[in-house]
Length: 235
Ligand SMILES: Nc1ncnc2c1ncn2[C@@H]1O[C@H](COP(=O)(O)OP(=O)(O)O)[C@@H](O)[C@H]1O
Ligand SMILES: [Mg+2]
Image (cartoon, rainbow, N blue to C red):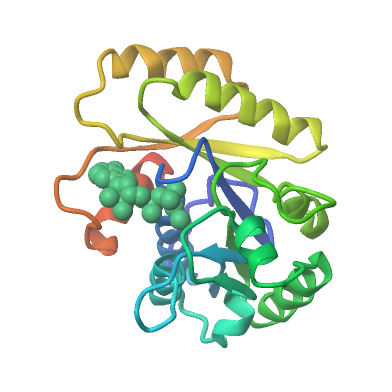
């Protein structure tokens, strides 16, 4: 490792990235975290256990972005064990295609990735309690993998409730909420600063960084990661 400054999060063999909703910046934050781990000289694998919505080539866009960010070469089947073509709730897509998603499959893929990497960054699908199968929700994934959670808060009207509910649900499952990242997804949000101040004062886990709204998205990660790296004390 070239940079002697300490990593701001207790380093874990993996992190689970959840968010206040779909489209709040989970993939972006996962990629930024991977960038910051790479800058620390670490091998950072990416995982998207469940994805819904594919491009013409059959690949999910999040999976493509995560694999491009990672410096660990791994088969797509390990990075993304479950992928469904329609961009709908994954358990519904699974049911319609006769697939029963199995936590054991995800845990086995995770272990293979973990053997190739120093850290595995795992992105959830949708919000924290999106259903996984008939027995459990996506929250069962970090529980099964034993991963600390990072919550991405998409700063928009309604985010206070969503952030507080998500934080409560994470901790109710005995998981560690390592921190949260504020992502400015709405350039026109009124009282954005005041909302952020409220979150900072109510949420006990630390705010790991704040990502400004970017007109052109996605930004170049090397440049964009500077935003979060700075907040994380790494740049
Ligand atoms: N900081 C930002 N500035 C501008 N647009 C953003 C920002 N973060 C996210 N977005 C927009 O939101 C979309 C969803 O982001 P993404 O990281 O894919 O979220 P998620 O993984 O939670 O679905 C992006 O494709 C982009 O259009
Ligand atoms: Mg995503």
